[in-house]
Structures are given as C-alpha cells and as structure tokens.
Image (cartoon, rainbow, N blue to C red; front, side, top):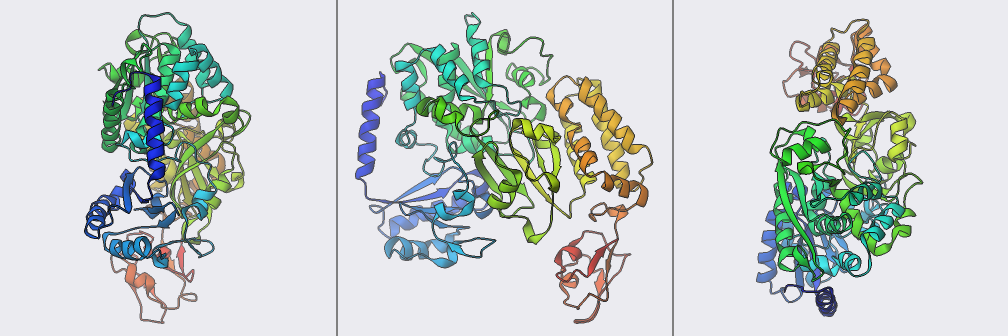
Length: 617
C-alpha cells in the first residue's frame, strides 16, 4: 500500500498495531546479524522454520530473524517473547528440545541459559542479564524485535512517526532548533554539534543540496554502524529524511564500506520498501517534499571515512582529502551544499523529534548528550555492542558490562577511538567516557571502538600494530603522513626486534609531533596517538625493550624466553600437552623443562599453566 498522505500512513499503522495486539502468538527472535551468522544462526533459523512447521506450531509461534542483539560473545542468541527467556549459543541440535520443552510445555531448559561469569548464576530472562540491564538502549533497543527486511515491523515500533510529525507540524527552522537544543554531537568521531552543521547548510541558497550518511566504518574491532544498518535500516533512512527536509536537500547517499554486504542488502531492501510506500521519492506522503536516496559502496580505503575523501570517492575520484578552508556546508558533493553525518548520528534524529530535545539533553554530560554505542572487544569476558549514557566510566563499561578480564588476568590498558586513538592505563579507569574527557587523557571517542588489553599485551607491539595499519591506509597525499607514519613504524619494528637504541624514544616523539601538526586530514593528525599515549603511560616498557632487551609481556619473540620454575612445577602436563612444537619434556608429577632450540615463543605454556611455574625472562 502506498501512502498518499500522512493521514493514510496514520490509519494504516493504527490498524497494524491493533491487529498485532490481538495476536496471541509466542515470538521467537534469533539474531541474524553478521556476528551471529558467523556462528551459524542462518542454519538455526532455517532449521527452526522447518521444525515449527513439522510440529504444527505455525499458529502458535512466530519466528523473527532480527538484527544484532549486541551480546556477540554468546551468539547465536535466541529469545522467546513475551517472557524474554534467553538461550545462548543455540545450535540446530538444541531446537527440538527447546520447542518441545519451552514452547509446548512451558519449561525453561537450564543448561541452555546464560551463566554470569562473576556470580556463576544461571539467568533465565534477557532483561536480568547484567550486560543488558546496565545499558540504556535507545538506538539498539528495537534491533531485537525488528526483521530488517519487513517495513511493517518498523511501523510497529513507531517508525516514520517522527517524519510525519515534522511534515505536519514543524518548519525546517523549528527542526534545526530542536536538534541544536538537544545537544546532539556527531558520533563519527569529531563530535561537531549536529544542529549547527545543519543550520550552516540550511542558510545557504542553492538549487541543489545533498545529505550523506557516512557508513564507512573502518576501525579495527568496530561494528556499531554495521549493526545499526543491518538490523534497523529504516531508522537511519528516517533520520536522513528529516535532515533533508530541514536543510532543503532532495538527494542523499549512504556511503557503505564494501566489506558490509549484509548491511548493503538490508539497506537496499529498506529503500525499495520506503519508495513503494511513498516514504521516499517524489511528493512524500502528499506533502510536496521530494527526496531520493542512493547507496554508494566504498572500496575499503580507511581514509575514505574522512569527509572530503568520502565525497571524492562518491564523485568517482581517488579518495583523497582536501583542505578544509571551504566548508562542506558551502561546497561539498559536486560543489553543492552538503550535510554529512554518520549512521549513529542519523539514527538519533527520530528519537529526538518524537521525544523532544529536553528528553535527549537530560541523558549524558553537560558537553556530551545522549547515549553512545561502543564495540567492546579484546581481553574481556562479554564482548559485543554496549549502549550507555555519555559520561559513564571506563571501569563501568569494562568490568560491569564487560564482566571483567578474561581468565582472571590483570587489566593493562584500553584503546579507544580506533587505530588513531590512544591507550588508557589502569590508573585512569575512572575516566568518564565523553568527547572532552577522553581527549584530556590522550585518546578520543572516535566512532566508538574499545579494545581491552590484559597483562600479556606488549604496548610497544600495540603501537606498532596500529601504525602498520595506518601506514598502509594513508592516501599518500601528505609527505608528513606518508613518510612519517612509515618511519615511526620502522623505529617500532626495530625496538620490538631487540635492536632499539638510545635516542629512539626522542626520535619517535619528534616525528609524531611533526606528523600531528603538518598532516592535512584527521588520519595523519591522529595517527601518532598510539605512539604518544603508550609513551606517556608505558614508557617503562619502551625502556625495557631498548635498555634491557626484554619484553615484559613476553610478546616480542627476539626479546623473550620462557622458562619453567622447577620448584613450582607440579608436573600437571598442561604445558606439555598444549605445546604445538613438542618443546616441553617431563614426566607426570615431575618438573618439566623447555627445549629452547625448539621453542617458538608462542606463550601457550605460560597461558596454560595454573601454578605460575612458567616464567617470562
């Protein structure tokens, strides 16, 4: 059905909600985001459809293949509504028992429940799991209920009501004032006030304006934007529609990185559905508002996440940044006024319009309003996506939501802000996570990646890893960025190989400052952050590598030797059984030894020993 007016839309959605309320079905939602698909959720969903039919449960059970639920560590995720019974790591061979016991007989299967890593308690309901209960989910809350390729599911959670509201009752100036009042800042990393950006573009007179959604999420370990686009594409489309109406744009682009095929598929389907319903295209809802939306796929270049390089890529040019003396709001895509925000920023817009600027501004801190989604990965028990109010501490995210460090190891650092972010030590775990506080400690918000590291992480090696990534991703336009990052990486390579010299640290600092000051775009200006932050907080590790020719974490192979303390070794043979090159010898219940000529310094013996008998020298 195509809606020819806002009234048509309202009549349809009202009937849809009434019809949905009258259903007395059990709803099973299974995550079908990229993470859960990697764990086999597609096979689970396919088998579940067949079993629901074969057991004659189609009239009783509705199955929804939804987007990412966030708790990626425990996927595939399986939730039974309305109760909210939560089963983790569901496999095909578990389905018969779930349908027979839980769906038909109403019994909870304890062995399939989530086990809290700290209390060891089995948790029945999704809402009682600390990973979820400690979050404040706004953007992600509907991912668990929506099938991304069904527009009616989005209508059931008040989808497109914000668009109707602005088309019926709000002028473009009123919309922009509301966004400014909310305090929303861009979630792509820069944190520029969204309403101010929109206002700049609105004031410029032009026969053509564009808006762009930056979905070129390239940070290692980050997948917030991907999960929003995969799981709730209509939310982003609605936000862009409202932005287009506010600034006077009639055409837009979603720039998605090539590595996100499911996001592209679901977004393309959503655009087609919105066009068929009269929510995109010409004369939207009979109001005279026109807006055409395209999907543009990037080639995977990290630098194309930078705004001017992204625009060049859409135009068919090489993805290189340009100087910012001309603002995009004046001359952006094809030299026309352009507004660019990232996925998460656009996703906030419908909620602000429906709930009001005052509601949004009460969440977060004075300078950073609303919630932020972080991808919590690395050496932490609960990896996944977490959505929390701006201003919560790193400690809260890592230890309360994340469940602490894997294998009861000691926390060492957390890297925020992607490859150009900084590494924050244990002494600063109580730092509030917002735009301004992270910059103060030498890191940044970035798009929201958060990589947790334990005591077995070498901070010199970490800096080298990120510079290795960045040197390959530099577009090469700036000499300082192209040559400076490469030179810093060479010095770090030398240090981790045991060839470090006095003066290397000072040279690293000097090059880092030049690259930071003289580079044209954000990639070069922030690339030195991993070096500068690790030197700031972990200088002793650099000195150990250079002066003592040792890697305290036991990571750099040229500087590491593993030995077994015979006084502590009980001969449990854990190290013996796990050594991949048979470098360990010893009888059961007798002290073991490592043959250094065979040892490849992988550290598996250290990781598997429960008696602290394996030492790093």
